[in-house]
Image (cartoon, rainbow over all chains, first blue to last red):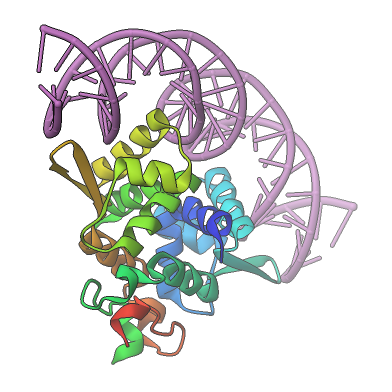
Length: 109
Length: 109
DNA sequence: ACTATATTTCCACAAATATGGAAATATATC
DNA sequence: GATATATTTCCATATTTGTGGAAATATAGT
């Protein structure tokens, strides 16, 4: 991960509609959701949704997988985690206690 | 943390110069760095740096603290961690194994 | 007050981004 | 091949964002 890659990923989710879409997919899990399901859940017009899905996909934040007439989109967990790691890299120059463990509550139960 | 707050924070660091600045401060620790030190380290013109520091500060990603002639900027670790938690909230609807613990390597040693 | 240093504001311009209706393009079913 | 559904492309427009020189504003030391 470098600065530009991180900016690409961050820009992808630094937008209300796209952040909603991304979190929706993060919570949906690896199976993902079809464009239609996302459109219906989040009440986003088709053309607008398509624009944002493309942006997320192009940035590498999500992946698309065709299945018959539907296209299933899913979060790219690897990108997400690389990004989070980049942001916190060498945090506080090695002095503890500045940032608690908060990643992925679901992986902690 | 809600969608708009998260977008505000993400937008703040979704830009090459600002991401550099932010990471610089994350690594500098709570004591922070003066505007001049940042300008010198990252080779950013004063007016441009000021613009970006203001953006980061206004978004709540960093904090400013005056000390004599200098203004020390430091990362707002609480914002950062809230943001990371929001992104990964309810990840995979509770099924493990999608996202490893990656937060703040320095707090793990 | 004068000088030096630190930081911000002002400004004008260039570039990128977000929006949604209408039409076009898949893909499946009858 | 006709029809229905899913998704994308096209387009024009409005808005936001990034840039850096020059001038203005702090703050400290002499």
